[in-house]
Length: 577
Image (cartoon, rainbow, N blue to C red; front, side, top):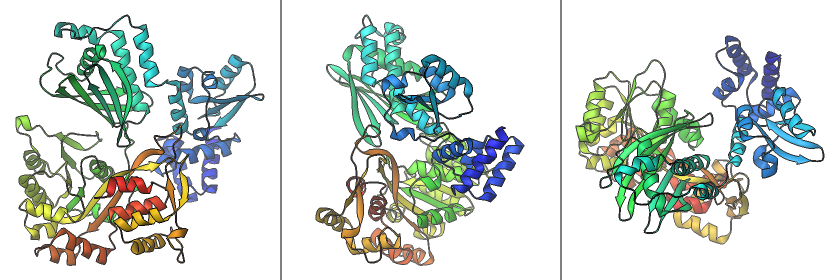
């Protein structure tokens, strides 16, 4: 019976043009080997969760529901207990005179349908929803951070303020403190925060989350809980709880069926106590692939071609927090096959990757980027990733590694792609060595993506056109839009549509998640010739634009605005120099 359903799902996906008939046959072969489930096998072919759910619905004769477009009332949600909903991946999303409407991942699970029917004693209307949408809906069981913590504080009889070091370990194990810290961590995960800031002031403790690159105040805790919260986080991170004068760094993990998150912890003494910042790192293995980081089709092909080369350097440039490491990890994810040895030297190791040898820099014991890189070269690597080129010695070793038959991936702090060349020259690297080792240079920034549920289409007005003219050549930009098929050949700016942020219950101020804007050039004979002379970043940029049609980050950002991915305000905020 299951095999029949699988075949029907594959047939539906072919009809929906999400896979080809040939791919469907390949997936069936994989299923017969018993090596993967249908869902997992289809994910390898890039089938989206929603498309799989639609095909499942079509194949099983059960209606499909997009949970993301439904406002679920609390009393309806609570019809199914949270533990049951998580175990069976089912959610109650509506109730009317016809009965209770439930969305489920697997409509063949009749046991849970019968359970709900007995509980409410009204008809149950079943629909299929995607795993991702159900998981997102499950987050609605949690209240707001403020409500959760206020409830904990109300239940607590009292928390010690200014506890002595001898008492800190006991305070950290108090149930209210454990619940407060747990609530702060869980809510950060559910909000897709990248960082948690716990900041003491003279009278209170401020909790802030960084979401999509922007810090948001989440709540204010009484100052009395500070000592316990700090001690609790130190214990989780295996830090010294009685050390308050020096900064400390640690790490811990939280795992569940829905997430696997590592927290990188940094403590810092400040005037009113100790401040803690925690970076959240998703270790579930669901990192971005190269085709999901925001590269245009032309740049994506260029990137693929250059990382496939057996040696040379791939450089990603940009300021801190611009997604450079994520881009390198996406490249390594593609390069990570059984026939190559990949070794990295990083500070810090952001994400763990299977079958990749990752080394953490430890300057206190002499393990610097340069020393680590020297050791890596003796480890018979095919591919080397250097977290960052910071100094002359590391730059020289990286270039020499690229010269001696290794593919080297690294990052550099420059504002533009062409700016990487003079920066490396400043590090005393000979121009002829750069010309012969660099394969490709990418500069990038991260912009917030517009929420698909509430973004608004607008025609370009005079103010927008003026803003565009201030940062790029408007005529050239319009031609780029026409080349990409975004604007028609006869269109003027007035016929082009942009999109704006609105804001709804499913997003943060009209935005949800981030994507890269890029500029990229690859080494060519003419650029090599220029580099061996005394050349500026501007001269290289002019040549790359003329010869390769290089698109600047601002231009790439405006293309993404016209594609309804982001807004003009966001591009101006992030990419304008």
